[in-house]
Amino acid sequence: MDKIVIQGGSELHGSVRISGAKNAVLPIMAAALLVEGVTVVRNVPDLRDTRTMIRLLEMVGAKTSFENHELTIDARPVDTPVAPYDLVKTMRASFYVLGPLLSRFGETKVSLPGGCAWGPRPVDFHLKGLEKLGAKISLEGGYIQAKADYLTGSTIRFEIPSVGATGNLMMAAVRARGTTVIENAAREPEIVQLGEFLNMMGAQVRGLGTDEITIHGVDSLQAADIRVIPDRIEAGTFLIAGAMLGSIELEAVEPKHLKVVVEKLEEAGAEIQSDQHTMKIHCTSPINPVNITTAVYPGFPTDLQAQWVALMALANGTSIITDTIYQDRFSHIPELSRLGARITLEKNVAVVMGRDQLIGAPVMSTDIRASASLILAGLAAQGTTEISRIYHIDRGYERIEEKFRTLGASIQRIPE
Image 1: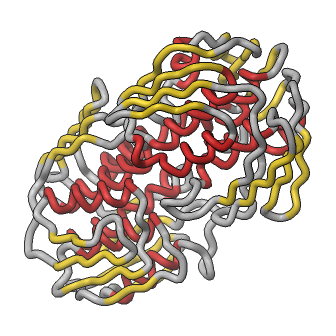
Image 2 (image 1 turned 90 degrees about the horizontal axis):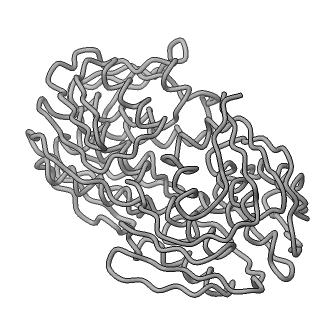
């Protein structure tokens, strides 16, 4: 396994190009399985997760070609609607194939994601929704088996908005008989783009970007081409880096997807200018302490919570960070503490007492966004920071160390 070694304290300056959105491309790739045709997806980030999804598509029979951020998916040969545990356990988004495979073949067998149990887990939103559409669901040997001679439109209401379940049920419902209404649906830009892609394929999906999505079933779909939207989480990570360490320009970004993040960064003292597809951020000193509470879109993203903790570790005062989405998503705190951050944690609330300086140390990555927070903290710390288990970062950030080097950071990837 590789590690990242950072010599901290360098100011950042220059421009960085934001990659395509991981959380948008994965359901789009799954949606390609709906049709017997060839789909072309552009601006695809070259990530461990996209490579995993490509392997899954090939395992069910699709032919793929991926080069220069352009992915071609030929779903005509698909004949094995089974998603095995070996792949699904490594990436929960693999579960997205459940809806399209059931819609196309009338049956499918998909492994439960790793760590999930049969019971009150988020995966239940997917399964109960499919049952409302008329599917028969059973659990055998850790696999979900879903069957339906045909799906029938229904009204489905989520207790809380679920991005994964909204996407899966949209893909299942596009060829159902009648009309499906998803109430309390996810509003994220990634779900909006999935719906737009389905409409390009001939579906009739309405209400995208609202909490009520209506799908009128159609008899058939055809393949389509699409360009993936910019990754708002990668963009937010680099904006936070700019607030900590210098002046950065983001290219190929979508500012309207980052409104709440911009508001909070401006509260923290950063200066931000935006136009159609670029954003510029200038840091100011000191960093003001700013409280955040994560929420479903358009609220503050849980995927930027760890990075915000790293920023507030250098603030001139105390801030409170509350995560209402994933209440146990704080594995970065013990590692940030190794760098000198002063943080106390009580359930899903972190209290960060800012300080003037962090000190480099060996730390360990635990997940995608925790990895990003450690990189940000390491870039700001004095001395050397070594981050191990960085395979996590490769799941969600494309060549992050190279992008930071173009901004003037002293950061290297070294084989262990």
